[in-house]
Image (tube, rainbow, N blue to C red; front, side):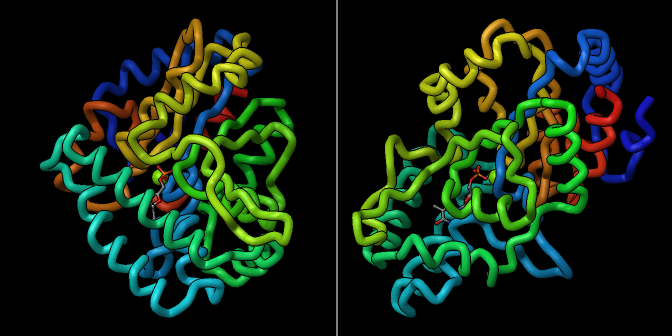
Amino acid sequence: MIPELSNPSVCMRDPQRVQEILQSMVKAGSNTVQVISDFDMTLTRFAYNGKRCPTCHNILDNSNLISTDCKIELKELLNTYYPIEIDSSRSVEEKLPLMVEWWTKAHKLLVQQKIRKDLLAMVVQESDAMLREGYKLLFDHLYEHSIPLLIFSAGIGDILEEVIRQAGVFHPNVKVFSNYMDFDESGELRAFKGELIHIYNKREGALLNTGHFQELRTRPNVLLLGDSLGDLTMADGVQDMENILKIGFLNDKVEERKQSYLDSYDIVLLKDETLEVPNAIMLYLT
Ligand code: TMP
Ligand code: MG
């Protein structure tokens, strides 16, 4: 039906079920569809030419807005907590408090750096941030077909917005839920706004933001894109959901995590740096 679903990177627990979901979405029409996506390592690349690409946090961490001492501390946090994030032998219950610890410590360090709002655009410009191949087609196509794209990120909203703005795809149909920086009158970072979003509380975030989902009540068909098992609950605020198709990028520790991803995502993309499959699905639905 969709040739790209035979790509070597594609794995599905139940291909028949995927076909059924797609068929019922096509039948319902593209005006009933919305896309809910994670950002880091889902819309952005995991690696390029064998080198890891940065997350929103990494874009700041690697920049000259951060002192050398602070860089070392942030690197230590990454080296401590990232292996926990991707450890398939630990439960979410065990990982959750540790992830809160990571985000809390990292944000505290960033706030100490008195980061200036007016320098963020330059930092993003000079970074190695890269959206996945095919991003322009995805963003433009969704915009042209008036399909809402909700980006739900535990990264940093100000950085994320700048990445998509500089890529020329921050269209009016894009809405972002993320951790936003709070700057004082002189334009220096003094805190992060609102409730912290980390990788395991996207469900709570979704439920708190039902206002957004309210607007989208007439769009009960959801295409969900993520790279972490924490991303699976991003659509929990959608009421009267009819169909959801979950596409998961499995970037790292592929063999260890493949089964758990197959159990929870409808389509798993193994070390696939492109948006070819989501794009093929979007084209099919519109
Ligand atoms: P998300 O992709 O689910 O929105 O999560 C954001 C990613 O940010 C997650 O994979 C971990 C990463 N991260 C960093 O790279 N550095 C940090 O300091 C923190 C707190 C998170
Ligand atoms: Mg992610």
